[in-house]
Image (tube, rainbow, N blue to C red):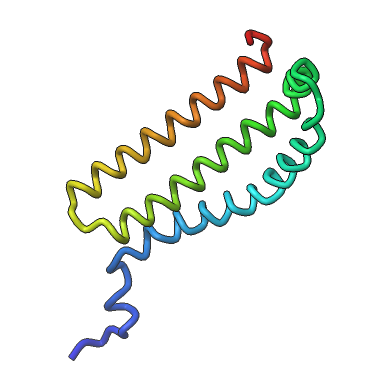
Length: 127
């Protein structure tokens, strides 16, 4: 018979240490995406009838560039976390799980890089 309580015996066991980290990151990105998405929809409605030159001039403003980059980063990180949880929960073969997680990370990184470079090229006037 042990003098430890049930809680003391199970403390430190299991995977509860890692899940809360991704849980909070996904919640924080979801909260950040609410105003960023609302801004994006309203901004698109405002520039919908504008010409190409007006739209490029609007994107060149520093706050619009920063908000676009913040939207891209938050959205891709949120999607990556969500899909990673789906992969971990429903893919049971370890080699396939590893391959899909690597593909997910590379895909999210490439999408983010291409999107941010495109916004910065427009913003700095190289397009």
